[in-house]
Each structure stands twice: as structure tokens, then as C-alpha cells.
Length: 101
Image (tube, rainbow, N blue to C red; front, side, top):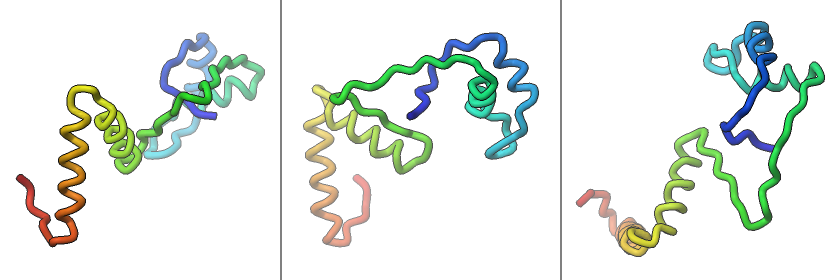
């Protein structure tokens, strides 16, 4: 299960937000309020991804870089150029070449 950051919420969410304690980073998390609404009998509707679909979690730099790279490599205009550049960088990494050009 994952949240995809597109919501249609009932007004109940505002009461849930008002009673939600701050979470990570000292912020009141919308997902915590949604969880509270659901626990109190609210209804949630989700969409299951097809087996051919993929979901990317970009909540940290590592996963963002992987998602960006995958989409960039698949780009019909720039993918081949990027693929050649990445291969060149990987091949030269063993030579101690850390410079940028």
C-alpha cells in the first residue's frame, strides 16, 4: 500500500488534523490524519496499480535519483545520449577520473 499524493478528502480531515500530534520533523502529517479518519470509520478508496505499472518513492535523494534516472533513460529524445554519458562515466570511474566536464 502506498500514498500517491493526490487526494479528495471530506471535511472530516480538518478535525483529524486539529487532533493529530506532530510527527516526523515536528510537523503534523496529513497521512497521520488520514489514518485517524479511517480508524474512526471513514472510507478510503484506492486504485491498484496494474502489474505493468511501477511506483517510485521519491522521499529521499537515493530513490529520487533512481526514479529520475529511469525516466531520463527512457526519454525518447535524451535517453540514448544520457545512456552513453553514464556508460562513459562508469567506464572512467575505474581510472580515478572524478572530474566533471
